[in-house]
Image 1 (cartoon, rainbow, N blue to C red):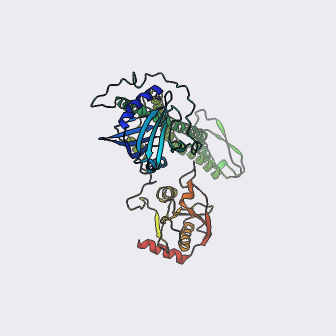
Image 2 (cartoon, one colour):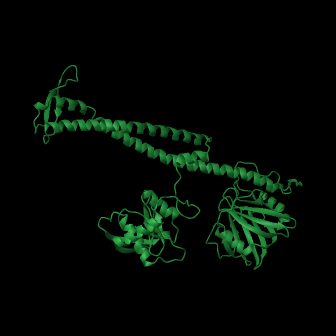
Length: 485
């Protein structure tokens, strides 16, 4: 629901006089596709929003505050360095198109911001005094370094809606609301973007539910197949009891035996298959074992099937609400309860140490060494606690613990620290029994989580290797330092 060129012209008419003689005192980028310029004019501070979001690209004043990310994106950092403190010269609308140009005078000379407010591929470009593109909000590398040229005007395809503002240019100004168009745009798009966000959440939820539903259906089919297969053994309890009553008639080497079926009122003769390689007792025990397998399967599989069927019904009910347009995202409390205990991943206490109970050692050079104790701890240690420059180790080609050496930025690990950590990686791996083997090591930044694999599975690049043996004196020293902590 993008603005028309007429609506853009109207908002520029409202903004331009209010920005005259202003200068940019602050720049923020609260969202990847949204920039806010805080502009100081005599007696007032204006907050100009430039949104390049598809379908809602626009420019207007805002009152609502949007929280900033901890680290400003690169485009925001560049503008802070180049135009913070710049004087606003003009704000222009390219007549007949959805492009707005803000000309500035910075410390280095004239520069410009050009907002292309298209319904698709909207962008904000930063130009130098010669009109050459220095950077774009969307990071379109093919435009950087090129003289700016407005894209060919495409026909505007309006959706079946009324204009955001009726009769542009005739909105009355009041002392309470000197910028009525901005107020209308802010209110309209706040609701519109909330609606779009809800729709995106619903689509994402529907996709996740359908994937999980397919998984549950496959699991249920497999369980039913197992139950059906186990059901063939239901009769074997009778076979076992009949063999037990007729053990004296059986001899090793028989392939069948005919006995009277006491469980049938007609007392028919029943032929029971036998394994000729087994004796009478072994054949009887085999039938009882298969029957117990059926009982166990029925006891375990039946409640699991019931649980899966209940979950499938819940998923289908939620999918129906999405289809009907009545779906609401679960509350924070419900989401937390559904997920269970939050993962330790990416969580640290104030002193930087993990919440998890990792094994802890200190190398001979005084560097902390942390060792995961299972697959989940390996995952939390590598992708939650470890920093990009920390040293990461693992025994080559075998299951084992992830080992991390905590290093200060720019620090190279000493050789003895590497050997200490490699010894621990060998000790807590399947190579422990042999007492020797290769251990790979690299910086944590070269370790990536293996997609679709179990916890602790990783892919490693730029690794080196070291051959170590389990040195008792080295291990004793490591354990001694660990006990002293």
